[in-house]
Image 1 (cartoon, one colour):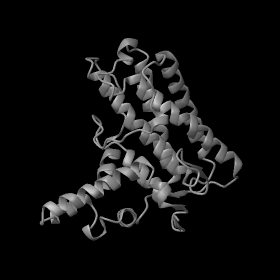
Image 2 (cartoon, one colour):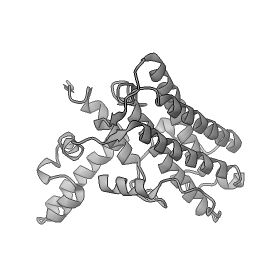
Image 3 (cartoon, helix red, strand yellow):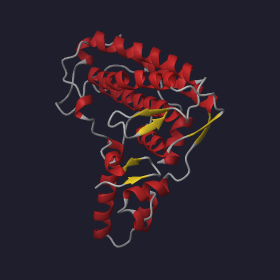
Image 4 (cartoon, one colour):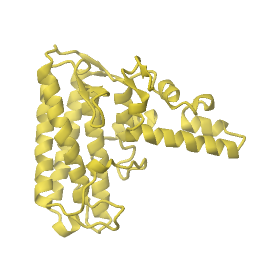
Length: 277
């Protein structure tokens, strides 16, 4: 029987299925194996960011690492997200100028083409965009000046957030439902992506009039886990930033000049992500 922990309002068994949590569990197991092979682990303990006494207990390690959740001025957070999405939309317009054969090209079956990356983002948008609007319309709240991130929302966002404007270092395997065969219509995918960015900007505008912490949105994996609206927006934007860098690098690897591709993440955001990692 799976115990439900009131602290998080959902079972760890359900949360463990999320790719971000699975990644940390793998990191923990690898850490323990390395520890057995090397008696001197003090420096590695510091690099990992968690004490070795707790490394075997992923939930406890998570709690220690993220015991103080980030707090944001709601207006400033939404303005920052709005700016991020505008950059992402500008990057999306860049893809309209790329040769379609390059957009669908992939070096191997294990790697995505640029259009597959965009369709992956579209699939998440098809779920989260209506889910956020539904959550904001179904529950009437007043605007709150401050937003405090939740445990899972902060963890998922920081796991997704790029720490480098040129590459994505912490690789994650996408769920099968969000991976697509390379037989997509480039114009259809790119146009939907751009429409979704317009919709996301509209929802960020709606969010200015509600409590970002009081409204909850279920994640794609299970309705048992709900993120605060503010965290859902943060996660969705970080996820888009991550994969836009991936798509850019895919095209660059094909010899396409990407000097006009917008910088997706501000340096100040990168510093914050590095400090949190």
